Length: 224
Image 1 (cartoon, rainbow, N blue to C red):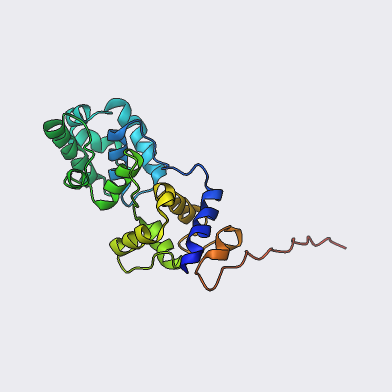
Image 2 (image 1 turned 120 degrees about the vertical axis):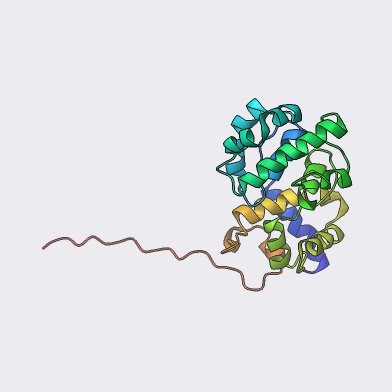
């Protein structure tokens, strides 16, 4: 994607997703953090179904520690890798209580030191909760970065660095939400729906996918 196409490409996404935000349901920084940890290799829909009942009972680090690994596990069994995630949620809650007075730290290194929290999760929390212009590269952003030519790279970190370099500073705050929603609902993994993409004119994908063929109406044979 030529540099001249980056801004109009993102402006087209912004026009399609003017109210773009995370689809995880949360009430504060702590429940956001837990939701993002649980969302690894899982859909936001599946996480929201589990955290609704979980957060009613344990919406604070103290309550989550009291619930314990087995208790947390009962609520998140429908989420992939739930055993390890239950352990991580309780362990990170213990650290928040012991070291940060039950608060989620506004610091990348401190966040990434928590069990189950990697760079992507830290980027989401820093962006959504603390208003930092970070880019959280998930499978959607990695795919779009390479497919569109916006930020090609062989690794997640390379794509992130490319995005931070190429996205105009005034668009960084919301860009990762535009890209996530676009990748989730239009520029899909198996088949990008280029025919309904308003950013297609600026996209670097050489062969755009055509609209699905319209099937002719079936004719009912009438007996003579």
